[in-house]
Amino acid sequence: MNNNLNLDPLVEHSSRKKRVNSRRKGATFERELVTKLNKKFNTKEFSRTPGSGAFATTHKNLPESLRIHGDLITPAEFKFCIEAKNGYNVNIYDLFKKRSELINFITQAKRDATKAKRQWLLVYKKTRKKALIVSDMNQFPIESYIEVPHLGVSIYLLDDVLLLDNSYFLLYP
Image 1 (cartoon, one colour):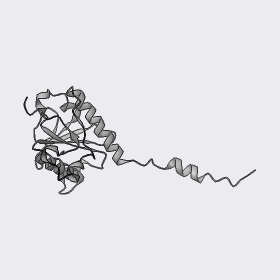
Image 2 (cartoon, helix red, strand yellow):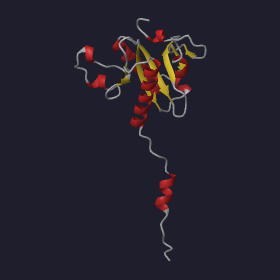
Image 3 (spheres, rainbow, N blue to C red):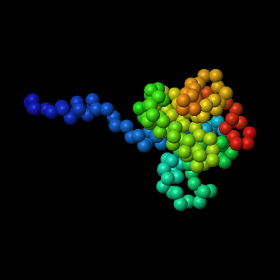
Image 4 (cartoon, rainbow, N blue to C red):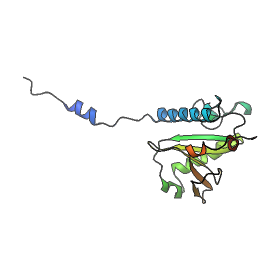
């Protein structure tokens, strides 16, 4: 009988946290968001940006008509440029910092929207939580939301925003 059986590799492996692939996690969230938006607007025009938003910065020499801004390609009549973030260790206190990931996400969403000549939306989802939309103050007529006046933003539940009439999302309602 062998009493020198080494169980350490089995024990270590089973107690290790599974490594999260953040790129895959972000891509999965973007695909889920695309599915929701295509269903809401009864279209197939929403899709992920090639390279997940990096396309605009890596293809600066393209003609303006071919440039893509944000994380999602949207229909021509859709008035928002969408930045999608999933995971990240963002919390409520980040709203009061001069520098935080959340502030950086908002800045990125605004910058991309300006380049696209559209309004901006940041869709953020923390793991195992409901997705939120961050946008300019009072963007949507929804009863339950959070105002952050010093940043000029409002925060809504994505599911509440998606219940609104499609005219709130179109350039030419």
